[in-house]
View 1 (tube, rainbow over the protein chains, first blue to last red):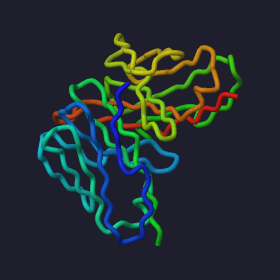
View 2 (cartoon, rainbow over the protein chains, first blue to last red):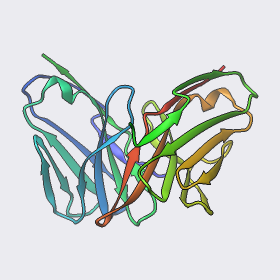
View 3 (cartoon, rainbow over the protein chains, first blue to last red):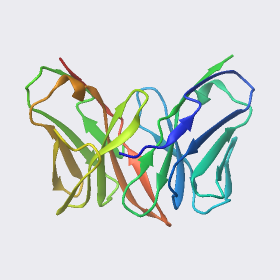
View 4 (spheres, rainbow over the protein chains, first blue to last red):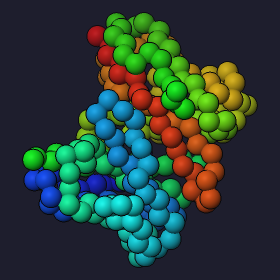
Length: 110
Length: 114
């Protein structure tokens, strides 16, 4: 089955640094979503993007829906320890199901 | 109380055993999903249901079956568990919020098949 390619697979950064991760697909999506999964928990929705070129922020998080509709980016500014977790992108073409990325594992050191 | 609950949270079983994982939701959503998570593979869809009479296979349904007993309950069964079904299993629900089908996930069930 199709999966989205997410990079990097993992990141080890120092508290206060900015983080960037991206997600690419060989086919287009109508909606892009970004989720965060804390250890021992299910994924939680962070940001939803509805149209190509859209740039949306949620606190220190900013995500963009790529112009080609085949990619999306997530940036986290001034990282803090509670940003630790796995970040997943997800694409949706129609109102049926999501296709998830492979995840980016983020570790923040004080 | 959590909106989406899963039981059990952890389960260890042996090859060949029948296992049922249960999911309940209090969000009043019609749509429910079962995903499997493996390291490095993200989440993959096993089955989904858009209402009580609707059941659909996802990308990795082989070896699994589901039952939608009520709007609020969606169970996943492994008729004869095998070791490569060892994984973290998530239930999710969704209802339309604007134009996006926002999915809410349960806390997960960690299944180990020996």
